[in-house]
Length: 312
Image (cartoon, rainbow, N blue to C red; front, side, top):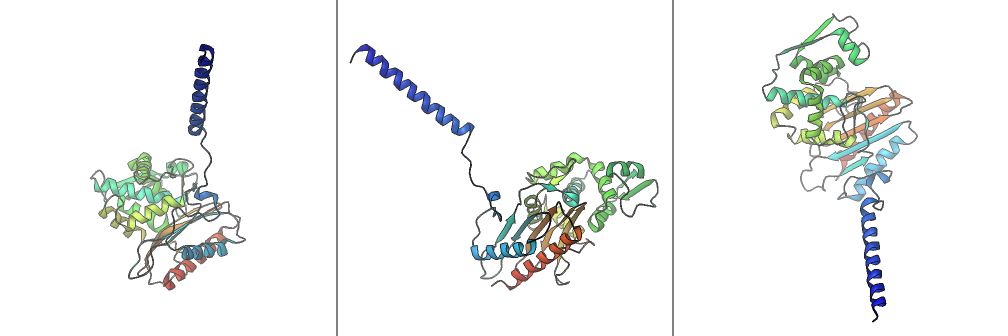
């Protein structure tokens, strides 16, 4: 082989190697798109062991949301199954999409406060207060029930937690958050790996993050068993019961947290159905009728309860 031919061969080989390198590098810089769960109308975050049952849950959601205004995110999952029944099943719709958190952020707030109490940095009987003018500035107005409140508003930590859990008191929430620092609330969300939860204006979270919160609460792994038990006790005081518990039998235990803003309605919690406890999270935004959304959620909750109760 001539020296010229040998040189050309070496150059050609080098060019080929360079081209292959460029192609491989491009795959890392611009990877090919993949289908993900969110590409489907009803997205399952992991494979179900019972496809028929999962489709039944999808049918329940589809029937209830058909023709309704607004955008919904739903997450439903059995937490345990007794006896010889099928494996736990779940359903997910837009569960990783951030929605306005409304009062669902107060779940992370309460957990963060209880963590401070457990660590000894705060006491349940400690007095905490803020001026009414300051609270109105932070909240953007007067919270419901505070129209005739005195200029200085104060509670013990336990009283504030009770008000947050019972009536979703916004002023009590602000007082608690400022006492421990808003960063501690975000820290709690981060510790729980709530990747779609942001505790800053506008506060946002997702159905998946909220469902994970309640799953950890059910497992008594929300920080510690003591924190989990205390938080469950507080949430059981909820007096806003026109969504998840609305059409359920009164004897069925439900712990949950609602959220409300203009054109936004949420509810999330655990339904302690005997033999089949489950977590259910329903979030909505861009609503044309908030009352319609509340009724839709109540109906979804009833249909899901009946489905699990009668499931063989």
